[in-house]
Every structure is written in C-alpha cells, then in structure tokens.
Length: 282
Image (cartoon, rainbow, N blue to C red):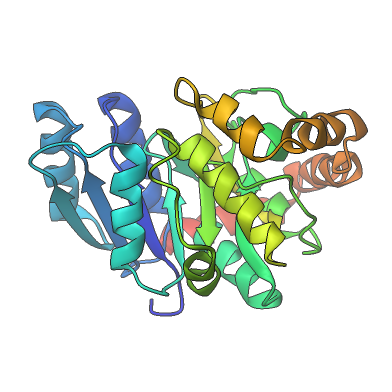
C-alpha cells in the first residue's frame, strides 16, 4: 500500500495494551501497509514475545527493531523520523487501538490540503480531539465499526487544533523536515515534543488539524515528563492561554454533535451491518 503513510509504533512497557494495540492495528489496517515497531529497550520478555508472534501472522508489512540500550522517548522517535526521510508517517501510541479505515482517512486528510502538516483523529481520550465530550476520557467505542462508519460519513472540513495529539498523528514528511524535527535537547516526552513541533509548524504557516473522519481509541491520555510543560510555557507563553481558550470556547462542539447524530442514524440502519461485514473482509 505505497499510497499510505508508514505507521511508526514506538513500543512501551504495558504488555496487555500492546497486545490489544497490535490486534486492532492488524484488523483495522489494509494488508501490506508498512509498519515499523521500534523498541527503545523498553519491552520486557513477554512484550518481545508478543511482537514476535504477531510478526509471524500479521497481514501487514511489518518490521521490528530493538535498541541495545535506551536513548529516551524523544531521541528514539526522532531517529525513526529521520530514517523515514520525507515520507509521510503516522505515529501510533503503543496503547492505542485504531478503528477500521483509520489510516486511509488520515492519508486522505493530508492529500486534501497541501498546507496540512499534522492530522489527528478523534479519540475517546484525545484531549482537544476527544469524543463524545471535549477534554474528557470516555470508554472506548462499544461498537468500533459503527463509530468508524459514523466518522467516515462526516464531511471532511478538517478544523484547526491547538496542536497535534499523541494517540495517533499523521505527519507530513516535508513539513516535518522543514521544521527541523523534534527538539531532542529540550523535551523528554513525545507529548511535549509533539506540541512544540506543532507550534513550530504553525509558525511556518502549516496547519495542525483534526481528521474528523478517523477514530483511534485509547485507554488514557498521554502525559508530559517532569519539567516539560514548564519548558513549553517558557518557549511558547501563548500556548496555555490558547489551549484554555479552545477548551472554553469549544469550537468543535457542533462537529461532535453531528458525529453523535450520525451514530443515532446509523445504529438502526442495515447499512451498518454491511459496513461491518465489509471491514471484516478487508
């Protein structure tokens, strides 16, 4: 699937979450999609065994690398991004569970507007991109196929987000290279480094948007490392007021309501069952 971004999956230490992530990734992603599982010496023996079993049966074109010693979350991910050159990528959290159609929708989002540098899908734990309620953690969708179908039925307008979010984010390779990549020296967490990258991209005229036609579930929100938010505030003093304004004004309220309405319409529709069956054969 050369028209789809490369999926980058930096591994963590939560083995149960990783098992669920790999199962969802395989089920929701087109066969042959390039996937890179990269281990910064973080996964334990059970995690490595899970990966090795998954690699033997996955339909995806997956590779696994493991560093002999950890270099840190941000440095590790920056090395992955540099290895991808100017290719478009999607960074997926190791505790996330993508819903059907997620990757094609993110690729289509990047293709619709050449000014889009980052595209973030909805999530039940997606902060500014949370659904059904802004800034709240909800349970993962009970019917993933229905949620995916409802998202895909939305008109793709791709509104602005304050910054990209770590459950899953599509990164345009050319924009990422122009911005200089991640600031390895200043930030210890992907959470903060992604915000910083988003703000630098915006300063260069690129867009950080919501891909409202895709959904990636997650058990919990990402979090910064100690000191990261203070460094963000020092570098970007307008960041926290802007985020607070976004949360208070809730510019995505109408869009979330439309998505909720589509859920209601589709729930009793026979088309939902056809969609679920088709996704199961993908």
